[in-house]
Image: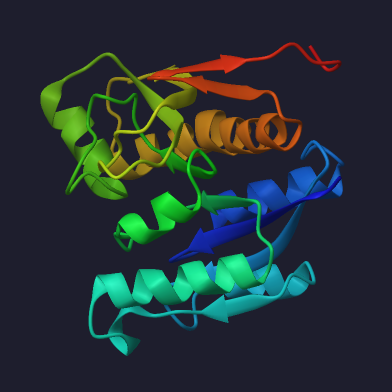
Length: 213
């Protein structure tokens, strides 16, 4: 049975594009991107959705009296649309617990670092790569994890590392992490979920055997 996926975005939508491309290649494990929700109007991610023929909605924080009210509106929409999996792909608005409670172990987020390093409140977007370079670590990467009520604190599904190179800028490092890690990990994690191959046991996520291994 097809799993219906909603992708939540806030900007250009490069990770959304990686998912749309994977779907076009038949690589989402039977999942289908059924809805894109943006926290901002006019972002390029909405154009990507339109080009792919995927319905989209804007649910902006500024239209609601609180983060809780916005999260409730978003959760109500997801439930009404019969969404099975929620994917945060560069979604920069903090959601409150209502969505996590409605979708336990069914919300995936991609974070541009190797959690638990360089994660938590304030660690998003280019800030992460600035902190990586400031600290002087030799490797960084990306993590796909289930979303819990703790920021960047849910069980880890997949991780991939890249070397930090001499002369890296935050922008250059961000691009390499996206290309070599995020755009590969996120479609893979979505595919595993849609195949029913992710089993959460406490903080551990076991990947069950499947035909594509």
